[in-house]
Image 1 (cartoon, rainbow, N blue to C red):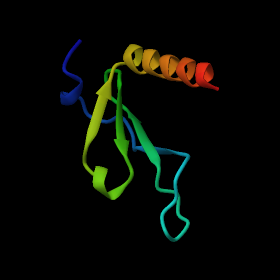
Image 2: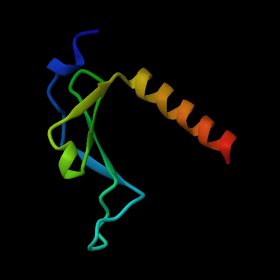
Image 3: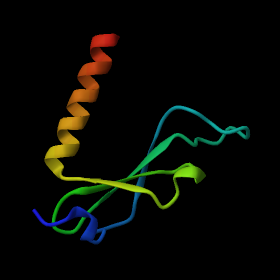
Image 4: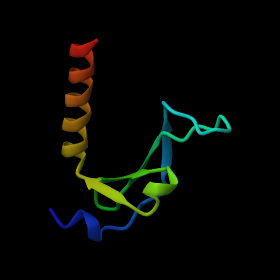
Length: 77
């Protein structure tokens, strides 16, 4: 697999929100997600402190993470 950090985005980031709000009641706890050309995903943080920072994962990596996280939350539930 080529370096995910060298791949261009295939579209715009979409915000997946849930959680905290700022002092004005605006949702600020969002993960942004965009697909990469050639496969994979770029994840970002929509809070001002996270601007411009990305984590990139292959489809297998993000799927394994999501399944692991859901299992952990369900077990704690």
